[in-house]
Image (cartoon, rainbow, N blue to C red; front, side, top):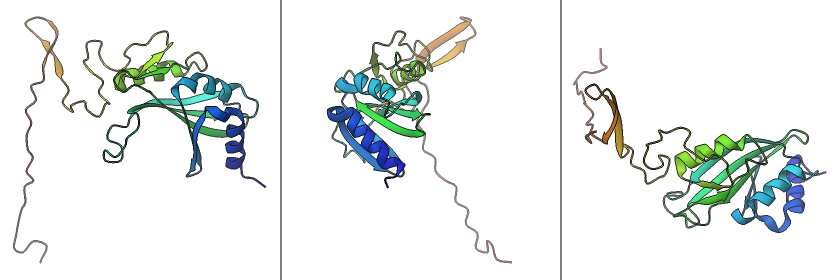
Length: 198
């Protein structure tokens, strides 16, 4: 008798066949990796195939693998990771696809398959700079329109590039270079000879 996870793994292998780059079962979860060229068609299969029926997209996020494994990672830098739920079958799967070009990360949009992907893809674009080809409204969602860069990239400085403040003389918000001075915090150590002794 096979377990639920084994049944899901078998159904994924049958339905996706050559589109499946890898499948990993760990900690009671299944993660599959598909190429970005096969991503849209694989996601359509995951949604429509009667063996799978992943009708709900619960999460989509961007990932930057540039410092993964303390810099030992040698694969593509940017990925989209999607969590799907099959309400009918009561099982979940994680799907990962990597953008083939690190300089211009482009992944097909799945917003036409699951409407919930719309804002998730906008968030991944805003924070990681991943472009979703075919998205009908790909614009920033969390940062300001004048924001420079993508703040969740590993090479983005913690202090950012510019800061914004209200200027009372101009009576408007202005952008200026970051004025935060780096500082070194030295902990204060108190040494008492009889500390803790009564």
